[in-house]
Image 1 (spheres, helix red, strand yellow):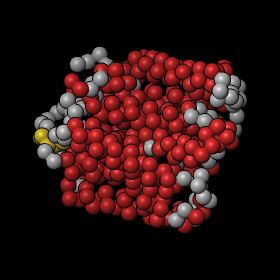
Image 2 (cartoon, helix red, strand yellow):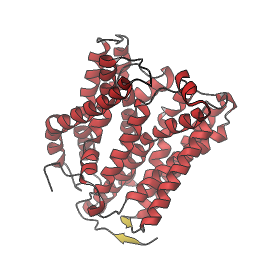
Image 3 (cartoon, rainbow, N blue to C red):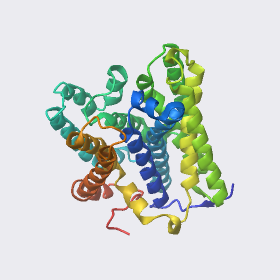
Length: 385
């Protein structure tokens, strides 16, 4: 692999990774807007093709794994550059930056969730569950008690991110490159031990999927990608990048086939199958990041970069948009009805509209504050060049 060395200076921003962010959101959105699995109407409509639909439906949720892997890569890259530039990592400044980026929108989303609990089709009992989300234990709460019915449901993943942030700056501050490899090996060992136990216990798919320790495998993949590249940008030919994308798709399809309980009882899925599947999910996520990393900015669509920059808002608001569209047009609509597809279009429009407004009026003031605490500048604001 040819590679080009980037400057290890005080700025690191790759617009092509914003495209990856948007792609990750798009996959998650498709997963959530599609009919639920086990819907008998799907089996009746697709007949012999229903298993293929189930596999693809599951693959789309791996957009979240892509988010985790990309987050780990970027956080590790920025912290190592900070250490190389300033001689150390300012842990306090790291936490201030993360708080200013995540908390305002996250807690606003939780507040909307509390309001939705008392709205049409809401459940007041969801408020207590949202309380666990507020202290970043939403992933554990979901793992042990199932998904909340509220539109804040996808935000369990923010708890996983915040748990990663607890140790990330300390590890980069005190670990050299060789020790970081050891740390990643420990993370992988921990994740796979958890997967082995959950497989032996015949745990349900949501119990496994929303477990923080399980998802740490994707964070290990992102960190490994960072330390292997050593600030380099892979100079792949177009066909190399295409092969990586195909490799990602192959990994994810195999992972879905290995873990889905739609083909056999879950208790017949061995621990080794589950462990192999989650390794493939993490590997596929690393493949897609490597496929995009280093693409020249002139080949990156401006609209995709914009959508990547507002992707956090897209993620936070999309379930609310789906909820509103279903409330207005009906929750149970025939697939043959145009209203079913109108609901999806309305959900898309509401999601993008809410995220654009949120970025401009809610997030931007805090992002300006965040920039004052940056050692290595990363993603610029939308009105900056």
